[in-house]
Image 1 (spheres, rainbow, N blue to C red):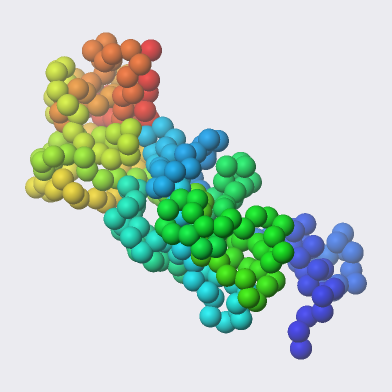
Image 2 (image 1 turned 135 degrees about the horizontal axis):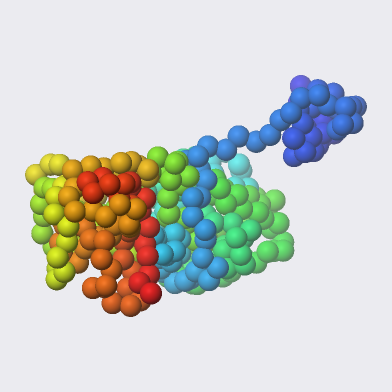
Length: 316
């Protein structure tokens, strides 16, 4: 037998207020057991969202050096068991070709992937992060941004969208739907942040040699530092295999707080930066131009050890 409407409301009200329901006739303050909602770290955004993201086809808006959101016109398919009342949002059939996201084609980010299948790994950003994040719904039209007839909030079909699952629901069983335009979150999830794992892709025209320093650029990709100022000697770190192809991608798993040794010439307690000499470190920022974004690796614990604490610094 199904739960009554009153029982459902009681369960929801008490859960929202941090209590488990044991009896719908009990007041909230008489419930003994704490409750809440479970959220997995791989489903939670790890970056602050930009207040004014760019809403053009496949435009990616960054925060610092990281890609955070991407504007995409997403096709929908009818949910097969809803009798016309629900539609499932998908990635486009040519997403891997059209997108410049660092994760396009990786993991679950593949052509025609239904968002509901990813269990929160791929999410539309909700309007709680700002008015620009409100989706636009269309019938008819093509894959071109803005084409077709827009379906506004308050339309007679009485619709709603679950941004997390990518499920569109309406009261009508006959009204059609073709497109949802909105911002996908393409930044790291909290799980990646806690692990100290950064997904990066190479911008090198040639292979990266073993033993060289790789750094994360402002576009979220990696490359070798490029050359003019002397760096500190003894700079083997990170790359221990023979080479990385220019098109390679994968995780960098040096955790924040890791102590890395084997260096010479470091000054205690002074920050360490990627040098302008390819593959080297430096503690001297005087050679960098004012306003340049440079990559701080961490701080010297001794003349031979660095505590990994990465951050982009703007040269004053």
